[in-house]
Length: 334
Image (tube, rainbow, N blue to C red; front, side, top):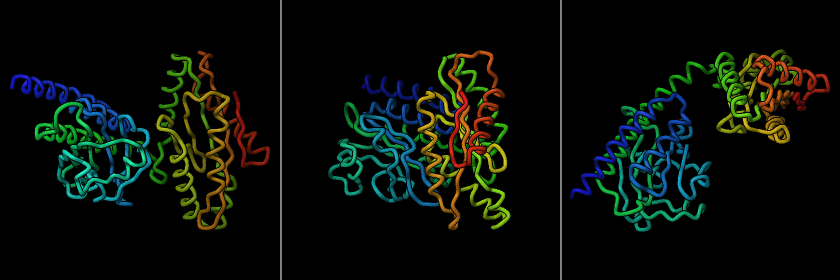
């Protein structure tokens, strides 16, 4: 009895601490990470995941997962109603499953794909008022069984996560380009300054990638500005799809985009950016082929006097060379 009371007190204290951490940031990626770390600690579980709902597609995707096979589930999507998380998101009701193998709502496809063995689950909806944002679930309690107290604690955490995600979405809307959804130029410059300072402090490499759509004026002149807007949107989607969590993707202006890519060495940056260029070249927007020219400004983290304007100039000069050499190519200035 006393041990159980002590566990509840520890859970409440940890919940208060995690709620403060989750609400201390406006970065959705950080919110998601804190939510999963907090949920598995709170319930002393082996694994956990946060699935968010894609409104247009009506599917849930794994925003974050921790545990033995956490990385393996990223990229997997579930339909609403599919699996425990899908059922919870569809019904808006929490659920405890003590024996996953015997539960008809349990979807074993993820275990088969990853090699993970799910024994038990507690899953709760992540909701803001009447709107479902996703589902938060933890699996395999390290000792004992999930109970109604665990359900209440996880629900309380999920409520804090929902509030934090909504605040972060509102903030992102205020700093995002209305057409492409990428970060605005002003925010991009602030982040570039921050990343440059961090690069100097910890002596790690930093890259600034400038991307310009080739012959964009001809697209506008021949097909109209609505087609030009469609091209900009599709390029933005590709940039987001083929960049990492830590990269910052922005619309620099007009038909130019910029990507801040920290930690990548000079030897590896060309390969990473070439993949993006090649994917854009494969695109067809209403039958129209698109290519881009790319300039990379590389910083090795050693020159303490280098300014963010100097790095922009490096990327600009590299982009100019790429254009002059025939477009649809990459050049690096280091």
